[in-house]
Amino acid sequence: MDRPAWAPEGVDMQQPSPARMYDALLGGSHNFAVDRMAAEMGVQLVPDLPRLALSNRAFLRRAVRFMLDAGIRQFLDIGSGIPTAGNVHEIVHELDPQARVLYVDIDPVAVVHSRTILAGSERAGAIEADLRKSDDLLAAVRATGLIDFDEPVGLLLIAVLHLVADEDDPAGKVAALRDAVVPGSFIAISHLTSELRPEDAGKLGEHSANETKIGIQFRTKDAIAAMFEGWDMVDPGVVELPSWRPESERDQHEQPGRSLGLGGVARKA
Image 1 (cartoon, helix red, strand yellow):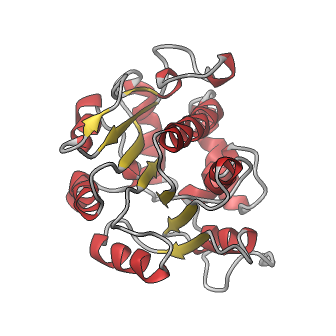
Image 2: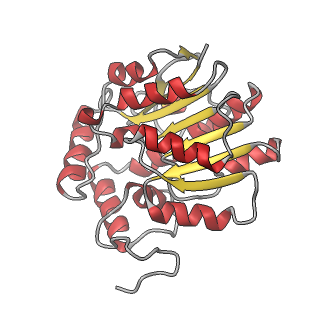
Image 3: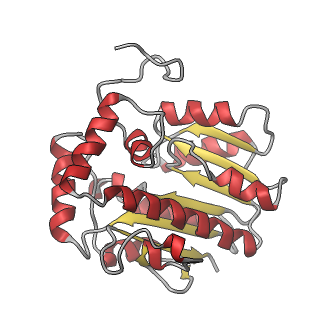
């Protein structure tokens, strides 16, 4: 298989990646055949899976705008994935070109794309780091000089914590980030859930474990809400993705009571 010019050497083109599968579900072009095949298998199991991807993307947009309205001017997007239209820096810089955005991902393809798009920008950057290694990640963030931890930060953990296994303590990783930021900071989390459609969640969970070897964790609402411990929840709390402060009918990508994703935003007091 020919390696695309945008794919770094050393990237396994035979192993699907969550970031590239998400890109495929959103209709992007920066993915491999194995990613498209894995995404299509997921769609065969759960036909409305692309709507979930759109719903998640719309939640990200609304959460960022909410934080901007609250005065946040620096954003740390962990598990940022492949850059697509409407990415965080575009949303942020439309309001304030001086605001800062740092993307973090474990997938080198996602990082390479981000750096290509952001080339020449002094207000946005991208690094490769692992959320499961909180101390190393925070050290790498500080080394960029883009994020000032003495000022409030907008933390974005969008569709990434369900990639962290229970034994790696996802709630503990969120707590480490909470301890690193000052009061007035915000966090947004979206997470796949087994709450509303346990059978479909089971199908996709089995597919992720057996076919893609990724191991996605579909968690209950209580388990996801527990990740916000130590934060003050913003209304309406942890809810279905389309139900978090929708701005118009265009945000209703999934039927009420049918979302496979939950999300919420909270503030550090």
